[in-house]
Structures are given as structure tokens and as C-alpha cells.
Image (cartoon, rainbow, N blue to C red; front, side, top):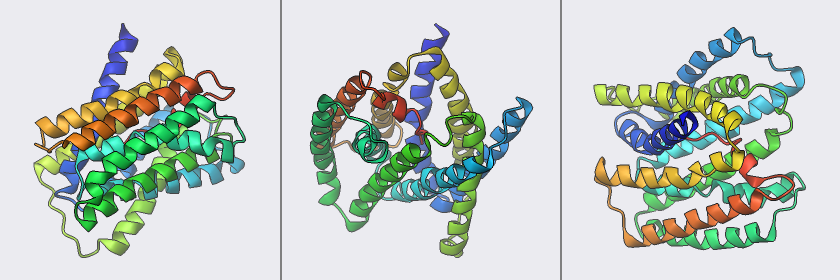
Length: 301
């Protein structure tokens, strides 16, 4: 019963993250807000890892942590936070849900693992859904088109980083690797903000501060710690089904809370993407290297 409660809470928390990001970046510069989020989240998680006497990274593992800092947290979240200034939180969530498709596509290229034929067919099906989802953005303003493409680039960066660092970080606690990667990513984002947002004003209202602390405490600290606990208690492919539910929560909250319009092509394309992700996860659970396990390497937003 406890596992189900944690599972549901994570779906709600990480499904809500997209709307909260949208609220935050409407008042605070995107790179600045992302930098503060990950620096503070890393500073909160690292002492927990040290109190638990988690092993410090070896010299050979620092390269993978640096890669995670840049391509898992730094560049992707700079793109995501910037993108949510121009496109809806629900559209961002649907595009991000294509992560398993990119993971499956990159797996044979980077790890030499065979991807089941059914998964490859689902990938092609999912690309069709992405094109339908993007059709609305591509007919909109240039900024919205660029934002949608930026989200997809962030997904590719994270998929690449997860696969590249998978073997090198297999012997270290995720709590330690994530806290250090968050700190590193926060530093990258801070440098980017200093260079690009020097003259950009930020309005730190109570709403913005509340959104920031939700992302730090609830989405990052609570989300990651309970997520890895859940992986120990449930089969990875079952946990991976959250990838199907989180976008639905984001769409519902975006429509109800932020009054975001959800056009019919987006709903249709979203259904195609989520169905294809489901097929990929199901096919991956029977492969030599389950795709659903690889998906677990990628943190939620």
C-alpha cells in the first residue's frame, strides 16, 4: 500500500513540476531560476549522502559526473526553463515524455544493445505523434517553434548523458552522483546566467519563491529520494510507467490551473506519443538490457 501511495505522489509531484516551472520563469530569468534550484537542491542532498556515509566518487567517476552536470542538468534545464517562457507547460511535458523513444534510439549506437523490433516500430509510431504535436507549434510564432525544438534538444542531451554515464556510475550511490551533478549543473547554469542574463530583471514575488521551493524541496529532494526508494521496492518497468502518467497530470493541471488551451491536434498527438512510449517500455522489459531500466537513469524535471 505504501508503494502505491509513493508511486501516486511522485506522478502528481513530477506532473505538477511543469506548471510550477511555467509560473517561476514568468517572473524570474530562466537560467537564474534553474541555477538557484539545482545549487540549493544539491546543497540539501549532499549532506544527506555524507550523513549516510555514502562513498565519495573515485577519480575515474568524476568525468561521468562532469558529463552529467553539463548534459543532464546544465544545458537541458537551461533549454527547458527558457522554452517554458514561450510554450505551454503541457506541451513541454508531452515533448519530454518522448525520452524513452530517444533512449531506445541511442541504445544500440552507444551501448551496442539490441532494441526489440516491436520497440523500433513503436519509435517510428511515436515520431509520427511528435510531428502531430509539433504541427501546432510549427504553425505558431518563431519563438514557440524554437522553444519546442529546444525541449527536444534537451531530451537528446539527457538521453545521451544517461547512456554515456551509465556504466561509469554503476558503482556509486545515485544520491551522491545526483547531488554532485546538481551542484555542477547549478554552477554551469550560474555561469550562463551571469553571461546572458546580466541585465535581465527578476521579480522574486511570494509566488515565484514558493514555486522555487517546491522545485527544490518537493520535486528534487523528495522526488529523487523517494524515486530511488521506489526502484528498490518495485520492478523498474513498473516504475517506468510514470512516464505515461506524468504528461497527463501536466496537461490537466495546465488546463485547470494556468488556463492553458489544449488544442485537439495536441491531444491526438499526445495519445500517439504516450501509446508508443508504452509499447517501447513493454518491449524493452523483455530485452537483454531493458529499456525501462535505462529510462530510470534520467531524472524528471
